[in-house]
Each structure stands twice: as C-alpha cells, then as structure tokens.
Image (cartoon, rainbow, N blue to C red; front, side, top):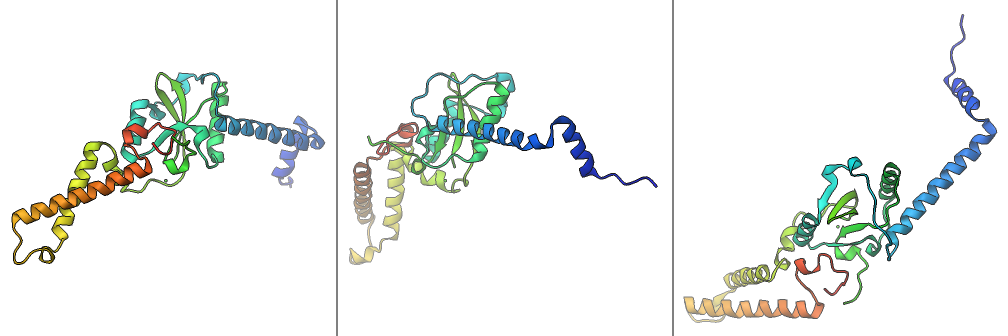
Length: 239
C-alpha cells in the first residue's frame, strides 16, 4: 500500500528548497517592517499641510467610474452642505483600508502621491477661524479620482434639511413657508373677537414672516454662517 500524502510536509519541503527554515522568520519580519514603513509614510503624507509637487498617474490604469470633475463634487457639496478640502483638515484617523488602497495605487502606478482631498461634513474637519468622508486623489485639470469612502451614509433627509442654505432665494422661500405654517396653526380667537378676516390673517402672516426672518438673520450673523455655494471649499469654520 502506498503511504498517504501529507500536504503540510510537502509544503514545508517546497518552502525549504526556496529558503532555509531558519531564515523564514527574518524574511517575514523584513516584509512586515517594509509594509509598516510604507503605510506610515502614506499616513504622514495624508496629514501634511504643505504639499510639494503633483500626482503622477497612468490614466490607462484608472477606472472611469471613479473619476469626477470639480463641478460634480461642488454640486454634491452644495446640496448636502459638505466641505471639499485637503486631507490634512480631516481630524479623525484615516482608516487602514484607505491607506491600503493608496499603497496599492502607488505600486500599480509606480508613483508616490503627494496631494489628497476629502469630502466630509464640517464637523469632521479641523477648520480654521475666519456623517460620510470621500477620499480623492487630484489628477489635474479639475479632475479627481475617488480612492475610498468610509463611515456611515448621510441621513436620508439631509439634502432637504440643507436646502434652505443653498442660496438666499431658498432661504427666503423656507422662511415664507414656515411663516404660512405658523399662521395656519395659530388660534386667531386669542387675538380677535368673532371670526377672523382675511386682513387679520395677512397681518398675522406678516408678523410671523418678520419674526422668523429676524430669528434666521440673527442666527446667521451670530454664528457667521454662509450659503452652501460659498463654503463648499472654504477652510474657515465661521464661513
């Protein structure tokens, strides 16, 4: 009877022909040390403030579905009130998966990337005084390559909650709608004797519009707020 084949023994023999067993640990340690050096270098480049040079890529190796123009990024930032800034403004840790993807891209393109951009809500960024990050690689000519997305998805109502902040016209329309709602739910019997007339409803609406508009203006000036299309790429928290 022929003896059965032990796969582990066969595998060990194959490995020992390539490298002595006493050297295998040194080889593994060397690989892991080099891996750690490369990952640390990428992390430092992501946090660097002053970028020198430009990214060099082989466009033939890039995926078309991950390439975005600056106008596409601006539109999503304006709609959801997000910021598009250099990666060094991101105040949380970049996930290891994102660093791995950068490392893979650099090896594939035989290049070292020096600049990175991030799309994220202002609360996740370290902004200077004046719920879904996206990590981008600038390609030049206002094009950017999406490297990695992490975190939780945005709230499904965020687009509509941020709609009033898109422009001055949107804000006025929102104040108008809120004033109509407040006028409709206000008990007119507390202000008039008998049935309220259209003129009285109009006066109440104007009062509500003035009150809501005043609150909005006070909040805006007090907090130094601005509209989405003015702050989407601003590094100042009071913009």
